[in-house]
Image 1 (cartoon, rainbow over the protein chains, first blue to last red):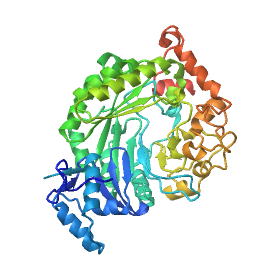
Image 2: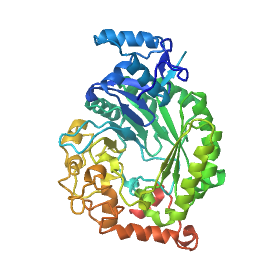
Image 3: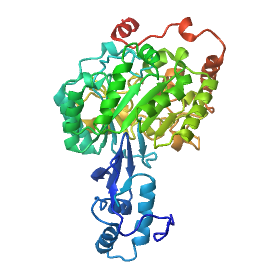
Image 4: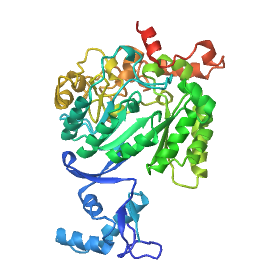
Length: 100
Length: 382
Protein backbone atom coordinates (compact mmCIF):
# COMPACT_ATOMS: atom_id res chain seq x y z
CA UNK A 1 0.00 0.00 0.00
CA UNK A 2 1.85 3.08 -1.18
CA UNK A 3 -0.81 5.71 -1.80
CA UNK A 4 0.66 9.18 -1.97
CA UNK A 5 -1.25 11.25 0.58
CA UNK A 6 -0.55 14.50 -1.22
CA UNK A 7 -1.47 13.76 -4.75
CA UNK A 8 -3.85 15.61 -7.08
CA UNK A 9 -5.62 12.36 -7.93
CA UNK A 10 -6.19 11.58 -4.28
CA UNK A 11 -9.17 13.38 -2.72
CA UNK A 12 -8.06 12.33 0.77
CA UNK A 13 -6.37 15.05 2.74
CA UNK A 14 -6.09 16.37 6.28
CA UNK A 15 -9.51 18.03 6.16
CA UNK A 16 -11.31 14.87 5.00
CA UNK A 17 -13.85 13.57 7.52
CA UNK A 18 -14.14 9.79 7.42
CA UNK A 19 -17.09 7.85 8.81
CA UNK A 20 -17.81 4.12 8.96
CA UNK A 21 -20.04 3.37 5.98
CA UNK A 22 -23.65 2.73 6.93
CA UNK A 23 -23.39 -0.79 5.53
CA UNK A 24 -20.89 -1.72 8.25
CA UNK A 25 -20.83 -1.74 12.01
CA UNK A 26 -17.57 -1.39 13.91
CA UNK A 27 -17.47 -3.19 17.21
CA UNK A 28 -14.93 -4.29 19.83
CA UNK A 29 -15.06 -8.05 20.40
CA UNK A 30 -13.42 -9.09 23.64
CA UNK A 31 -13.52 -12.79 22.70
CA UNK A 32 -11.41 -12.04 19.64
CA UNK A 33 -9.40 -9.31 21.32
CA UNK A 34 -10.00 -7.22 18.23
CA UNK A 35 -12.22 -4.70 16.55
CA UNK A 36 -14.40 -6.23 13.86
CA UNK A 37 -16.44 -4.81 11.00
CA UNK A 38 -19.81 -6.49 10.76
CA UNK A 39 -21.95 -6.56 7.63
CA UNK A 40 -24.73 -8.77 6.28
CA UNK A 41 -23.69 -12.33 7.10
CA UNK A 42 -20.05 -11.38 7.32
CA UNK A 43 -17.28 -10.12 9.51
CA UNK A 44 -13.83 -8.66 9.00
CA UNK A 45 -11.45 -9.02 11.91
CA UNK A 46 -9.20 -5.98 12.12
CA UNK A 47 -5.63 -5.83 13.31
CA UNK A 48 -4.78 -3.45 16.13
CA UNK A 49 -3.79 -0.43 14.02
CA UNK A 50 -6.77 -0.75 11.69
CA UNK A 51 -9.03 -0.90 14.74
CA UNK A 52 -7.39 2.15 16.31
CA UNK A 53 -7.83 4.18 13.12
CA UNK A 54 -11.41 3.10 12.40
CA UNK A 55 -12.66 3.66 15.93
CA UNK A 56 -11.68 7.31 15.50
CA UNK A 57 -13.69 7.60 12.25
CA UNK A 58 -16.77 9.03 13.95
CA UNK A 59 -17.97 11.34 11.18
CA UNK A 60 -16.72 14.39 13.11
CA UNK A 61 -12.95 14.20 13.36
CA UNK A 62 -10.84 15.18 10.36
CA UNK A 63 -7.98 12.99 9.19
CA UNK A 64 -5.60 15.53 10.71
CA UNK A 65 -7.42 15.17 14.06
CA UNK A 66 -7.30 11.39 13.80
CA UNK A 67 -3.61 11.36 12.99
CA UNK A 68 -2.85 13.71 15.89
CA UNK A 69 -4.89 11.57 18.27
CA UNK A 70 -3.06 8.41 17.19
CA UNK A 71 0.34 10.09 17.50
CA UNK A 72 -0.56 11.24 20.99
CA UNK A 73 -1.98 7.89 22.12
CA UNK A 74 0.99 5.91 20.87
CA UNK A 75 3.70 8.51 21.49
CA UNK A 76 4.62 8.38 17.83
CA UNK A 77 5.14 10.86 15.03
CA UNK A 78 4.96 10.86 11.25
CA UNK A 79 1.94 8.55 11.09
CA UNK A 80 0.00 10.52 8.50
CA UNK A 81 1.30 8.57 5.48
CA UNK A 82 0.21 5.25 6.98
CA UNK A 83 -3.12 6.63 8.17
CA UNK A 84 -3.95 8.20 4.79
CA UNK A 85 -2.95 5.03 2.96
CA UNK A 86 -5.15 2.92 5.20
CA UNK A 87 -8.11 5.27 4.79
CA UNK A 88 -7.65 5.21 1.00
CA UNK A 89 -7.84 1.42 1.13
CA UNK A 90 -10.83 1.51 3.49
CA UNK A 91 -12.65 3.91 1.15
CA UNK A 92 -11.91 1.63 -1.79
CA UNK A 93 -13.32 -1.32 0.15
CA UNK A 94 -16.33 0.86 1.08
CA UNK A 95 -15.75 0.38 4.81
CA UNK A 96 -15.43 4.14 5.11
CA UNK A 97 -17.23 7.07 3.50
CA UNK A 98 -15.70 10.53 3.31
CA UNK A 99 -18.12 13.19 4.49
CA UNK A 100 -15.97 15.98 3.10
CA UNK B 1 -24.32 -17.99 3.81
CA UNK B 2 -21.48 -17.00 6.06
CA UNK B 3 -18.71 -14.96 4.52
CA UNK B 4 -16.52 -14.80 7.57
CA UNK B 5 -12.88 -14.11 6.91
CA UNK B 6 -10.95 -15.47 9.85
CA UNK B 7 -7.64 -17.20 9.84
CA UNK B 8 -8.78 -20.21 11.83
CA UNK B 9 -6.63 -23.16 10.89
CA UNK B 10 -6.98 -26.56 12.52
CA UNK B 11 -6.91 -25.81 16.20
CA UNK B 12 -6.65 -28.04 19.24
CA UNK B 13 -8.44 -25.57 21.48
CA UNK B 14 -11.62 -24.54 19.70
CA UNK B 15 -12.22 -20.85 19.21
CA UNK B 16 -15.61 -19.27 19.86
CA UNK B 17 -18.73 -20.14 17.86
CA UNK B 18 -18.57 -16.85 15.95
CA UNK B 19 -21.63 -17.68 13.84
CA UNK B 20 -24.80 -18.66 15.65
CA UNK B 21 -27.73 -19.86 13.55
CA UNK B 22 -31.06 -20.25 15.29
CA UNK B 23 -33.56 -22.27 13.31
CA UNK B 24 -36.51 -20.95 15.25
CA UNK B 25 -39.12 -23.18 13.65
CA UNK B 26 -39.63 -25.76 10.93
CA UNK B 27 -43.02 -24.26 10.15
CA UNK B 28 -42.90 -22.56 6.75
CA UNK B 29 -45.51 -21.18 4.39
CA UNK B 30 -43.31 -22.22 1.43
CA UNK B 31 -42.81 -25.78 0.24
CA UNK B 32 -39.54 -25.56 -1.68
CA UNK B 33 -38.33 -28.82 -3.15
CA UNK B 34 -34.68 -27.76 -2.64
CA UNK B 35 -34.94 -27.00 1.08
CA UNK B 36 -32.01 -28.28 3.16
CA UNK B 37 -34.22 -28.90 6.21
CA UNK B 38 -34.43 -32.57 7.18
CA UNK B 39 -37.12 -34.54 5.36
CA UNK B 40 -38.27 -35.98 8.70
CA UNK B 41 -38.97 -32.56 10.21
CA UNK B 42 -42.62 -33.46 10.82
CA UNK B 43 -41.57 -35.72 13.70
CA UNK B 44 -39.39 -33.11 15.41
CA UNK B 45 -40.25 -32.34 19.03
CA UNK B 46 -41.85 -29.11 20.19
CA UNK B 47 -40.17 -25.77 19.49
CA UNK B 48 -38.12 -24.12 22.20
CA UNK B 49 -40.03 -21.53 24.19
CA UNK B 50 -38.97 -17.88 24.13
CA UNK B 51 -37.00 -18.00 27.40
CA UNK B 52 -34.79 -20.83 26.12
CA UNK B 53 -33.95 -18.92 22.93
CA UNK B 54 -33.06 -15.87 25.02
CA UNK B 55 -30.81 -17.98 27.25
CA UNK B 56 -29.10 -19.49 24.19
CA UNK B 57 -28.42 -15.97 22.93
CA UNK B 58 -26.89 -14.90 26.26
CA UNK B 59 -24.74 -18.02 26.61
CA UNK B 60 -23.51 -17.97 23.01
CA UNK B 61 -22.71 -14.27 23.16
CA UNK B 62 -20.71 -14.84 26.35
CA UNK B 63 -18.60 -17.36 24.39
CA UNK B 64 -17.96 -14.79 21.66
CA UNK B 65 -20.70 -15.42 19.11
CA UNK B 66 -21.30 -12.23 17.12
CA UNK B 67 -23.04 -13.02 13.83
CA UNK B 68 -26.57 -14.22 14.41
CA UNK B 69 -28.77 -15.84 11.78
CA UNK B 70 -32.48 -16.19 12.48
CA UNK B 71 -33.86 -18.77 10.14
CA UNK B 72 -36.07 -21.82 9.96
CA UNK B 73 -38.47 -22.73 8.40
CA UNK B 74 -39.86 -19.25 8.29
CA UNK B 75 -38.78 -17.31 11.39
CA UNK B 76 -41.62 -14.80 10.97
CA UNK B 77 -44.15 -17.43 12.04
CA UNK B 78 -42.75 -17.05 15.57
CA UNK B 79 -44.65 -14.21 17.21
CA UNK B 80 -41.77 -13.73 19.68
CA UNK B 81 -39.32 -12.86 16.88
CA UNK B 82 -39.27 -9.20 17.93
CA UNK B 83 -38.41 -10.19 21.52
CA UNK B 84 -35.60 -12.44 20.33
CA UNK B 85 -34.22 -9.68 18.09
CA UNK B 86 -34.39 -7.12 20.89
CA UNK B 87 -32.42 -9.32 23.29
CA UNK B 88 -29.88 -10.19 20.59
CA UNK B 89 -29.42 -6.49 19.84
CA UNK B 90 -28.98 -5.66 23.51
CA UNK B 91 -26.26 -8.31 23.69
CA UNK B 92 -24.37 -6.87 20.69
CA UNK B 93 -25.11 -9.43 17.99
CA UNK B 94 -25.22 -8.46 14.32
CA UNK B 95 -28.63 -9.84 13.46
CA UNK B 96 -29.52 -11.35 10.09
CA UNK B 97 -33.10 -12.37 9.38
CA UNK B 98 -33.26 -15.06 6.70
CA UNK B 99 -36.78 -15.05 5.36
CA UNK B 100 -39.14 -15.87 2.54
CA UNK B 101 -40.79 -12.53 3.29
CA UNK B 102 -44.12 -14.16 3.99
CA UNK B 103 -45.54 -12.47 7.08
CA UNK B 104 -43.36 -9.37 6.84
CA UNK B 105 -45.88 -6.55 6.81
CA UNK B 106 -45.21 -2.92 7.67
CA UNK B 107 -46.13 -3.33 11.36
CA UNK B 108 -43.64 -6.13 11.82
CA UNK B 109 -40.77 -4.58 9.87
CA UNK B 110 -41.18 -1.37 11.90
CA UNK B 111 -41.11 -3.38 15.14
CA UNK B 112 -38.08 -5.38 14.00
CA UNK B 113 -36.23 -2.23 13.01
CA UNK B 114 -37.07 -0.80 16.41
CA UNK B 115 -35.81 -3.95 18.12
CA UNK B 116 -32.44 -3.59 16.37
CA UNK B 117 -32.56 -6.00 13.44
CA UNK B 118 -29.52 -5.31 11.22
CA UNK B 119 -30.30 -7.05 7.97
CA UNK B 120 -32.93 -8.96 6.07
CA UNK B 121 -32.06 -11.60 3.49
CA UNK B 122 -35.04 -12.14 1.24
CA UNK B 123 -35.38 -15.27 -0.83
CA UNK B 124 -36.81 -15.46 -4.30
CA UNK B 125 -37.28 -18.74 -6.11
CA UNK B 126 -37.12 -17.32 -9.63
CA UNK B 127 -37.54 -14.16 -11.66
CA UNK B 128 -41.08 -14.76 -12.81
CA UNK B 129 -44.29 -15.09 -10.90
CA UNK B 130 -45.06 -18.36 -12.61
CA UNK B 131 -41.75 -20.05 -11.81
CA UNK B 132 -41.37 -18.55 -8.33
CA UNK B 133 -44.79 -19.77 -7.39
CA UNK B 134 -44.28 -23.21 -8.94
CA UNK B 135 -40.91 -23.78 -7.25
CA UNK B 136 -42.12 -22.70 -3.82
CA UNK B 137 -45.47 -24.42 -4.37
CA UNK B 138 -47.21 -21.21 -3.24
CA UNK B 139 -48.50 -17.92 -4.63
CA UNK B 140 -45.90 -15.63 -3.12
CA UNK B 141 -44.13 -13.75 -5.93
CA UNK B 142 -46.20 -10.57 -5.71
CA UNK B 143 -45.95 -10.57 -1.95
CA UNK B 144 -42.16 -10.93 -2.07
CA UNK B 145 -41.96 -7.97 -4.43
CA UNK B 146 -43.93 -5.89 -1.94
CA UNK B 147 -41.65 -7.02 0.88
CA UNK B 148 -38.62 -5.99 -1.17
CA UNK B 149 -40.10 -2.48 -1.36
CA UNK B 150 -40.64 -2.44 2.42
CA UNK B 151 -37.03 -3.49 2.99
CA UNK B 152 -35.91 -0.50 0.93
CA UNK B 153 -38.35 1.82 2.65
CA UNK B 154 -36.91 0.85 6.04
CA UNK B 155 -33.39 1.55 4.83
CA UNK B 156 -32.11 -2.00 5.05
CA UNK B 157 -29.46 -3.20 2.66
CA UNK B 158 -31.28 -5.19 -0.01
CA UNK B 159 -29.94 -8.73 0.08
CA UNK B 160 -31.55 -11.26 -2.21
CA UNK B 161 -30.96 -14.96 -2.14
CA UNK B 162 -31.96 -17.23 -4.99
CA UNK B 163 -31.26 -20.93 -4.82
CA UNK B 164 -30.30 -22.19 -8.29
CA UNK B 165 -31.02 -25.61 -9.75
CA UNK B 166 -31.91 -27.28 -13.03
CA UNK B 167 -35.34 -25.66 -13.29
CA UNK B 168 -34.29 -22.02 -12.83
CA UNK B 169 -30.56 -21.77 -13.55
CA UNK B 170 -31.23 -20.83 -17.19
CA UNK B 171 -33.00 -17.70 -15.89
CA UNK B 172 -29.94 -16.21 -14.17
CA UNK B 173 -29.92 -13.14 -16.39
CA UNK B 174 -33.60 -12.44 -15.71
CA UNK B 175 -33.01 -13.06 -12.00
CA UNK B 176 -30.19 -10.51 -11.95
CA UNK B 177 -32.30 -8.00 -13.88
CA UNK B 178 -35.04 -8.47 -11.31
CA UNK B 179 -32.50 -7.91 -8.52
CA UNK B 180 -31.42 -4.70 -10.26
CA UNK B 181 -35.01 -3.48 -10.56
CA UNK B 182 -35.54 -4.17 -6.86
CA UNK B 183 -32.41 -2.18 -6.03
CA UNK B 184 -30.47 -5.11 -4.56
CA UNK B 185 -27.07 -4.40 -3.08
CA UNK B 186 -26.15 -8.04 -2.54
CA UNK B 187 -27.34 -11.02 -4.53
CA UNK B 188 -26.51 -14.55 -3.56
CA UNK B 189 -26.95 -17.02 -6.42
CA UNK B 190 -26.64 -20.13 -4.33
CA UNK B 191 -26.52 -23.33 -6.29
CA UNK B 192 -28.45 -26.03 -4.51
CA UNK B 193 -26.54 -28.02 -1.96
CA UNK B 194 -27.91 -31.50 -1.74
CA UNK B 195 -29.14 -32.10 1.79
CA UNK B 196 -32.61 -32.75 3.16
CA UNK B 197 -35.33 -32.20 0.60
CA UNK B 198 -32.78 -31.23 -2.04
CA UNK B 199 -31.01 -34.58 -1.56
CA UNK B 200 -34.34 -36.35 -1.94
CA UNK B 201 -34.97 -34.45 -5.21
CA UNK B 202 -31.35 -34.38 -6.37
CA UNK B 203 -31.77 -36.00 -9.77
CA UNK B 204 -34.54 -33.59 -10.72
CA UNK B 205 -32.66 -30.52 -9.41
CA UNK B 206 -29.14 -31.19 -10.69
CA UNK B 207 -28.26 -28.87 -13.57
CA UNK B 208 -26.11 -29.99 -16.48
CA UNK B 209 -22.55 -28.76 -16.74
CA UNK B 210 -23.56 -26.71 -19.80
CA UNK B 211 -26.26 -24.98 -17.73
CA UNK B 212 -23.78 -24.12 -14.97
CA UNK B 213 -21.31 -22.71 -17.48
CA UNK B 214 -23.99 -20.62 -19.19
CA UNK B 215 -25.13 -19.27 -15.81
CA UNK B 216 -21.59 -18.31 -14.85
CA UNK B 217 -21.10 -16.57 -18.19
CA UNK B 218 -24.41 -14.70 -17.79
CA UNK B 219 -23.38 -13.58 -14.31
CA UNK B 220 -20.04 -12.36 -15.64
CA UNK B 221 -21.76 -10.39 -18.44
CA UNK B 222 -24.15 -8.84 -15.96
CA UNK B 223 -21.31 -7.84 -13.62
CA UNK B 224 -19.63 -6.05 -16.51
CA UNK B 225 -22.83 -4.33 -17.61
CA UNK B 226 -24.27 -3.11 -14.30
CA UNK B 227 -23.57 0.52 -13.63
CA UNK B 228 -23.89 0.57 -9.84
CA UNK B 229 -22.46 -1.35 -6.92
CA UNK B 230 -24.04 -4.76 -6.57
CA UNK B 231 -22.17 -7.57 -4.90
CA UNK B 232 -23.01 -10.86 -6.59
CA UNK B 233 -21.98 -14.11 -4.97
CA UNK B 234 -22.20 -16.97 -7.43
CA UNK B 235 -21.84 -20.02 -5.23
CA UNK B 236 -20.49 -22.71 -7.54
CA UNK B 237 -22.19 -26.08 -7.13
CA UNK B 238 -19.60 -28.30 -5.54
CA UNK B 239 -20.53 -31.37 -7.60
CA UNK B 240 -18.91 -29.60 -10.56
CA UNK B 241 -15.62 -29.03 -8.76
CA UNK B 242 -12.60 -31.26 -8.24
CA UNK B 243 -11.92 -30.20 -4.68
CA UNK B 244 -14.49 -30.11 -1.87
CA UNK B 245 -15.69 -27.00 -0.09
CA UNK B 246 -14.12 -26.29 3.32
CA UNK B 247 -17.48 -27.03 4.82
CA UNK B 248 -18.26 -24.85 7.87
CA UNK B 249 -14.52 -24.09 7.97
CA UNK B 250 -14.28 -27.51 9.60
CA UNK B 251 -17.04 -28.81 11.86
CA UNK B 252 -16.97 -27.22 15.29
CA UNK B 253 -14.69 -24.39 14.22
CA UNK B 254 -17.00 -21.37 13.75
CA UNK B 255 -20.62 -22.42 13.27
CA UNK B 256 -23.20 -23.37 15.85
CA UNK B 257 -26.75 -24.18 14.81
CA UNK B 258 -29.65 -24.71 17.17
CA UNK B 259 -32.63 -26.51 15.63
CA UNK B 260 -36.27 -25.71 16.52
CA UNK B 261 -36.38 -28.41 19.20
CA UNK B 262 -33.13 -27.19 20.81
CA UNK B 263 -30.60 -29.63 19.35
CA UNK B 264 -27.17 -28.03 19.06
CA UNK B 265 -25.40 -28.93 15.81
CA UNK B 266 -22.07 -27.99 14.19
CA UNK B 267 -23.90 -27.46 10.88
CA UNK B 268 -27.53 -27.33 9.73
CA UNK B 269 -27.48 -30.87 8.35
CA UNK B 270 -25.29 -32.64 10.93
CA UNK B 271 -28.10 -34.36 12.78
CA UNK B 272 -27.94 -37.11 10.15
CA UNK B 273 -24.38 -38.07 11.20
CA UNK B 274 -24.53 -41.39 13.07
CA UNK B 275 -22.92 -42.20 16.37
CA UNK B 276 -22.55 -38.65 17.65
CA UNK B 277 -24.10 -37.06 20.72
CA UNK B 278 -25.81 -33.81 19.82
CA UNK B 279 -26.84 -32.15 23.04
CA UNK B 280 -30.09 -30.31 23.54
CA UNK B 281 -29.92 -26.78 24.93
CA UNK B 282 -33.01 -27.50 27.03
CA UNK B 283 -30.83 -29.49 29.39
CA UNK B 284 -27.29 -28.34 28.69
CA UNK B 285 -25.46 -25.05 28.38
CA UNK B 286 -24.25 -23.74 25.05
CA UNK B 287 -20.74 -23.82 26.50
CA UNK B 288 -20.99 -27.52 27.31
CA UNK B 289 -22.47 -28.28 23.90
CA UNK B 290 -19.71 -26.40 22.06
CA UNK B 291 -16.69 -27.58 24.06
CA UNK B 292 -17.58 -30.92 25.60
CA UNK B 293 -20.01 -32.88 23.44
CA UNK B 294 -18.85 -35.61 21.07
CA UNK B 295 -21.06 -34.12 18.38
CA UNK B 296 -18.84 -31.03 18.30
CA UNK B 297 -15.50 -32.62 19.18
CA UNK B 298 -15.51 -35.67 16.97
CA UNK B 299 -14.66 -33.92 13.69
CA UNK B 300 -12.37 -31.26 15.15
CA UNK B 301 -8.71 -31.55 14.19
CA UNK B 302 -7.78 -34.39 11.84
CA UNK B 303 -7.56 -37.50 14.00
CA UNK B 304 -10.83 -38.74 12.50
CA UNK B 305 -9.54 -38.61 8.93
CA UNK B 306 -9.02 -41.64 6.73
CA UNK B 307 -6.97 -41.85 3.58
CA UNK B 308 -6.67 -40.10 1.19
CA UNK B 309 -7.36 -37.12 3.50
CA UNK B 310 -5.06 -38.11 6.37
CA UNK B 311 -1.85 -37.75 4.37
CA UNK B 312 -3.16 -35.07 2.02
CA UNK B 313 -1.21 -31.80 1.86
CA UNK B 314 -4.51 -29.95 1.31
CA UNK B 315 -6.27 -31.24 4.43
CA UNK B 316 -5.80 -28.00 6.35
CA UNK B 317 -7.41 -26.10 3.47
CA UNK B 318 -10.65 -28.04 2.99
CA UNK B 319 -10.79 -30.33 6.07
CA UNK B 320 -11.74 -33.23 3.79
CA UNK B 321 -14.89 -31.41 2.64
CA UNK B 322 -18.38 -31.96 3.94
CA UNK B 323 -19.01 -34.75 6.48
CA UNK B 324 -22.72 -34.88 5.65
CA UNK B 325 -22.02 -35.26 1.94
CA UNK B 326 -19.48 -38.01 2.66
CA UNK B 327 -22.07 -39.80 4.78
CA UNK B 328 -24.96 -39.35 2.34
CA UNK B 329 -22.98 -40.61 -0.64
CA UNK B 330 -20.66 -43.24 0.85
CA UNK B 331 -22.34 -44.24 4.10
CA UNK B 332 -19.28 -43.24 6.17
CA UNK B 333 -18.94 -39.67 7.45
CA UNK B 334 -15.17 -40.10 7.90
CA UNK B 335 -14.56 -40.69 4.21
CA UNK B 336 -13.29 -37.95 1.94
CA UNK B 337 -16.08 -35.82 0.48
CA UNK B 338 -16.67 -37.56 -2.89
CA UNK B 339 -16.52 -34.17 -4.61
CA UNK B 340 -12.73 -34.48 -4.28
CA UNK B 341 -11.24 -36.21 -7.31
CA UNK B 342 -8.78 -37.95 -4.98
CA UNK B 343 -11.67 -39.75 -3.29
CA UNK B 344 -12.18 -43.39 -4.35
CA UNK B 345 -15.89 -42.49 -4.43
CA UNK B 346 -15.52 -39.53 -6.79
CA UNK B 347 -17.24 -41.51 -9.55
CA UNK B 348 -20.52 -41.13 -7.60
CA UNK B 349 -20.31 -37.38 -8.22
CA UNK B 350 -19.18 -37.55 -11.84
CA UNK B 351 -21.93 -40.08 -12.60
CA UNK B 352 -24.59 -37.78 -11.11
CA UNK B 353 -23.24 -34.84 -13.13
CA UNK B 354 -23.06 -36.94 -16.31
CA UNK B 355 -26.65 -38.13 -15.82
CA UNK B 356 -27.77 -34.51 -15.50
CA UNK B 357 -26.20 -33.75 -18.87
CA UNK B 358 -27.93 -36.51 -20.78
CA UNK B 359 -30.71 -35.67 -23.18
CA UNK B 360 -33.83 -36.98 -21.60
CA UNK B 361 -37.32 -36.11 -20.61
CA UNK B 362 -37.66 -33.14 -18.33
CA UNK B 363 -36.82 -34.79 -15.02
CA UNK B 364 -39.97 -33.56 -13.35
CA UNK B 365 -41.92 -35.60 -15.90
CA UNK B 366 -40.01 -38.76 -15.10
CA UNK B 367 -40.31 -38.48 -11.36
CA UNK B 368 -42.20 -35.66 -9.70
CA UNK B 369 -40.54 -33.22 -7.32
CA UNK B 370 -41.43 -33.86 -3.72
CA UNK B 371 -42.25 -30.50 -2.18
CA UNK B 372 -41.32 -29.78 1.42
CA UNK B 373 -44.47 -30.03 3.50
CA UNK B 374 -45.52 -31.61 6.79
CA UNK B 375 -47.75 -34.02 4.83
CA UNK B 376 -44.90 -35.17 2.55
CA UNK B 377 -42.58 -35.43 5.55
CA UNK B 378 -45.09 -37.65 7.33
CA UNK B 379 -45.48 -39.77 4.20
CA UNK B 380 -41.71 -40.27 3.86
CA UNK B 381 -41.34 -41.06 7.58
CA UNK B 382 -44.57 -42.68 8.72
